[in-house]
Image (cartoon, rainbow, N blue to C red; front, side):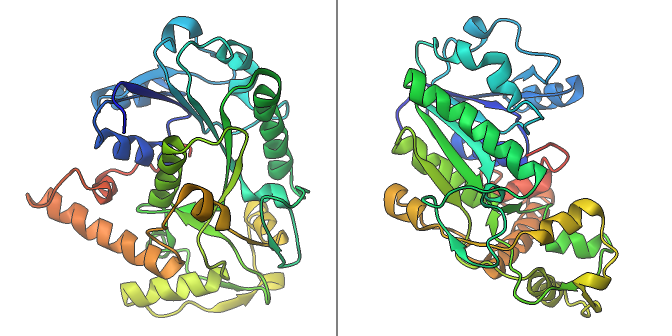
Amino acid sequence: MASGRTIFCFGYGYSCDYLGHALMQQDGWHIAGTTRDEERRDILKGRGIDAHIFDDNAPLTDVALTLKDVTHILISTPPGSNGDPVFLAHGKELAHLPNLQWIGYLSTTGVYGDRDGAWVDENDEVQPTSQRGSRRQNAEQQWMSLYNDHGLPVHIFRLAGIYGPGRSALDTLRAGVERRINKPGHAFGRIHVEDIAGTIMASINNPQAGQIYNVCDDQPAPSHEVIEYACQLLGRSLPPMVNFEDADLAPITRSFYMDNRRVKNDKIKQELGVNLKYPNFRAGLEGCLAAEQHALNIASGGGDEGDVGAKAINPMKSFGS
């Protein structure tokens, strides 16, 4: 990678933290970003990240000064009813940054809505069926307007369900949420957090302004299969199988089961050369368990903290992704 590059991550949470950690292993990268409270800002600063406060009610005070040396921007903030808060607060100002080479926006495959289990790719029309999906669609349109109207180097990444160390089915089981939901024909798409970082880095190295990318693994699968494999890895008995119609689920959890689609990831492989480290949930869960063991090894005095898996020592799981 070329030297002298600065990435500024609006919403420096779980996914951005893995990306920042990976970029820190490269020469010439400076990492900056935002969080919503002062305690987290101080934690980030203590780890060498130039951290700032930002939220809907607290925009950056001097964008021209704060971002004057920024070459790359990643937006990971959740949209509200009016769209993406970064776009609303600073979209016009970004058009005047002198050194900007790349902008990435983290969206969701939820914009495709329910397809009754059919496969979709980036050429399919979006038709969200949830408020979350509709808000993401609006935010995508806002960011793409900066590409269309001002030529800014915007890239959209539609992420499947994010998991990784500290945020996987292994942790669900340990937390005592032991149930398998059966909804015949239903499948979820997933993506390991390290593969999110790898895909973004591939885009940074091969920018294609105006492009949209699905970021998911190769194998959409029912949630109960993931729980079953997590039980196998942890040596636990299988929890009872509960039919979806009979399950006592929180409204937000139930809403995730209402959409059923299978998302293709060919584009990131063909255009960006991405080779997924975790192409399915089995490899991903094995990776999560290995990262935990690696973290324990480091804590006991062995191992290399430079390994991305070492993030399992203190994953930013309390930060929004």
